[in-house]
Image 1 (cartoon, one colour):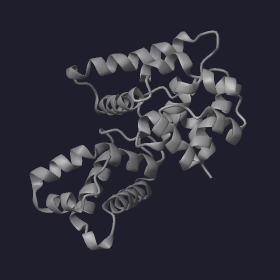
Image 2: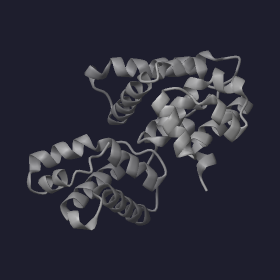
Image 3: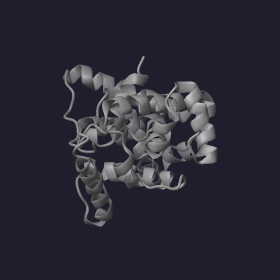
Amino acid sequence: MISNAKDDVVRAQTDQEFMNRFIQENKRFIMACAYRSVGHFVTESDDEWSIAMIAFHEAVMNYEPAKGDFKALAATVIRRRLVDYQRSEARYSQEISVEPYTMDGDVDDEDPSALQLEIRQKEAEISDMSSGGSPGGSAVRDEIEAVQELLGEYGFSFFDLADCSPKAEKTKKRCAEAVIALLEDPELFRKMRSSKTLPIKEIVKASGVPKKILERHRKYIIAAAEILNGEYPLLAEYMSYIRKALSP
């Protein structure tokens, strides 16, 4: 996550080597801003990515500590530059080729192996990081690694989601309601994080989702809430149906 230390930003303004490192350390933040600005995936091979990087650099160079938070400034500059680009080009760039059904659980109940196969393919990508790969694939792997570490604090793995993701449409909707209850109630979300478990009783009360569904899909609900609450734009697409429900 991006540092808000004013000294780091000021140092980057005059130290090119530090600037390069500062940008690299905040690539996920830049990608998240780009994703929110254009409404679709942005990979490191897209024009939008280059524009977002340049905008981030611009924000660093124009930042004045007395005028407030750098993170807010950077997000605003990135959004403005990308909006200007979209208007001038009158088009969207091609989205990255990942399958959004993987964590949506949008597969036939008779063929759960399809979901498991996709997750295992992601697992193989991580284990093969040393061999390189496409920029977009690298970005996905970076997010998976970060989420893998986060979910480890809850006692399960990203790859456990292959066995606990909802498949039936009705179940998907109920899980979405549980995730939304967590995201719309900061206190409930904080309780989940501090206890490292799903506050089932409170979610039942807040959302009306049956206890049985919450228990069966506990790992999926926790993972979805953490991903949608964080800066993981590529993985967030796997929960697109939840994101749509959150939109005003």
